[in-house]
Length: 77
Image (cartoon, rainbow, N blue to C red):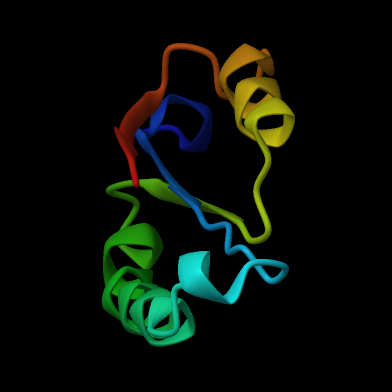
């Protein structure tokens, strides 16, 4: 499969650092484990993995609207 046709796995993370009651204390561990699980699939050419740490609604919409990724996002986490 050509690189520009591979499905995209979009991993977006955001955490509230202002309000302690809304802070997700295990988010960094979740991100680390997911990042460890996907490289083999990417290297094998099965997908392209995009990471959006500290994501905002705008940054996520930008990925979906970007011509490079349009209609290729298969998994959004």
